[in-house]
Image 1 (cartoon, one colour):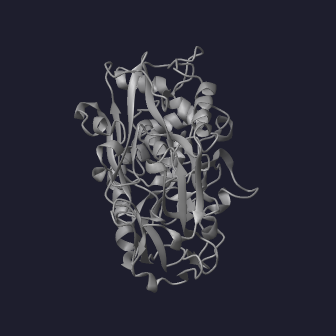
Image 2 (cartoon, helix red, strand yellow; image 1 turned 45 degrees about the horizontal axis):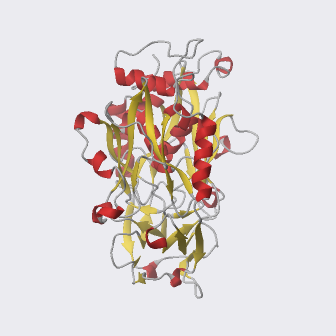
Amino acid sequence: MPHTAAPGTRWRAAASLAERLARSAAVRDSPGLPTEDVVLPWLARERRDGGFAVSRIPFAQLDQWSFHEETGNLVHRSGRFFTVEGLRVTGEDWPAGGFNQPIISQPEHGILGILVREFDGVPHLLMQAKMEPGNTGLVQLGPTVQATRSNYTRVHRGGGTRYLEHFTGPGRGRVLVDTLQSEQGDSFLHKRNRNMAVEVFEDVAAGRGHRWMTLGQVHALMGLDHVVNMDVRTVLACLPLGPETTPGGGPAVPRADPFQEALTRSLSPGESVRHDELELLTWLTDLRTGTPRSARLIPLSALVGWRRSEDAISEPSGRCHRVIAVSVRAGTREVTHWTQPMLEFPGQGVAAFVVRRIDGVLHVLVRGKAQPGLRDGIELAPTVSCVSRDWRALPPGERAPMLDHVLGADPAQIRFDAVLPEEGGRFYRRDNRYLVVEAGDDFPVAESDTMRWVTLRQLKRLLRYGTYVSVEARTLISCLQSLWDGVR
């Protein structure tokens, strides 16, 4: 790119990061890297030329993976990476008082990191064309670094992780965001990743498979199916983002578009909220401690109602996820060939935010939702979150509240609608439909015991603490903020 770092960058680093990123969000295209003419063809070229292939295999063809003789757990010869074990769940949150299922146990933290550098006064993000075996289309837009600890410590004996030095050790750049966040609580046990953004002030070349892009360019790609991966979305949700403000705390430049104005105020400090931060934290803690629940590991071979065949571990109804095995070839990865187990989910899930303008400020209706693998049992989730089972086959009594409302919404009410991928390193082609549906003034403001209206700024503040906001809700935060036109 023909850009250069602007003079005085270090001085400007002391300014509001939220406002600097707002300027980047306003730049939806880049003269040096046009989104449609360069970025999308670049991803297509990486997909075409990477030598990628993924195929289903029977368990007997797994290399370095095997079923433990005593427990039946799927384990790697090194004892690292992850294991597939059984989980027994009990408590009043679950139908019939409990269930059992396979679960991924991965007691190590990965790094999801985005490098930030200012060009011509506009912060840019170093993005990666990232291949993961479970991704639909295999290559999607990923963060600068996306690696488990086993990978970046090279347990696989492959190549090193590029740009890792900017996120670890004393030589890293200026840390902008650093927080531990959960992953899917329906399929990982207590799994957390380190979500990071680090700013550099020296020249950092975009090597093969990487490109410098504005936040606005990434936002523009968010609404396309199967393009921006989950790890980008969770890091972007953690970034502070907001408009320039007046001394009184309100937006400096009112928007002509009422939705943009309400969204701007939702990101702004000093706006009216229905609940302050302490009230939200107390409500969530009450939910977490009010109902006894238990989730404990059991041998994979002890799962009741699950059957192991030569190529899958599944339960008879076909409504739940199952364990499979794949063989992978990837010419541009640290290791070019491997096999591994994965989880495959039935059908396509749905996750949705219902949003409403309250006193001119856009509010999001969030739900305190239990998932068996979460460390604290419950996190703030989307208004509707049907991502674990085949929701189309659920009986009426088990369908999520408001599911029919969001699926039957008038097209004029739908502000965001895209099919987005989940974690492609452990899930096989797991995609969910993500929706932001705006409710009208006739939609009730009254809240149930498990739901609260919050602003986007409140959600982003909670993300600083980690493990309060679910991964599906973090995706929807990124989707919603991608609709904001930024600060010009």
